[in-house]
Length: 182
Image (cartoon, rainbow, N blue to C red; front, side, top):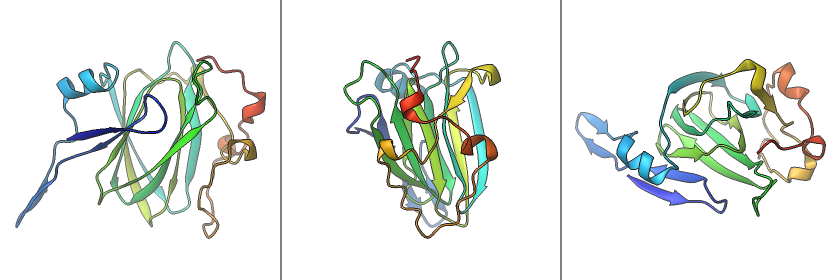
């Protein structure tokens, strides 16, 4: 398993070593000792899964302290554009984002530490997404930012997609009106 830094400190892309043979394939998707050492002491306490259809855009979501979460995101089946947005006030990359294409084929994972908002867009007919997190979900602490805020300069590459967005996500606040708790 290889862990690569991104242009934003703390964000990591994980590429597994995949072993193929006539039966199919095998790879290690999680290694507690390695992840504790290489991913800010990331310790999984909850594992979530969602299935979405082409054009579904979820996010930008995050949880406020003390229920903030680090996430390890993987697309088990299909393909998504996964995006993390830096909300850490003291970070030199505050308000910047990183994009990664995750798919059932490339088996990459995206590690998103606490202090980031997360969103994804489904590019394939359907996608199954797994999120391992290091803190419990708290509805009272959930928050988010609008996905299409032009000040964030995010190219979603969604020009030819009919987007499917929840009413809640359509009504999230803009970045300029956001007071970061991180």
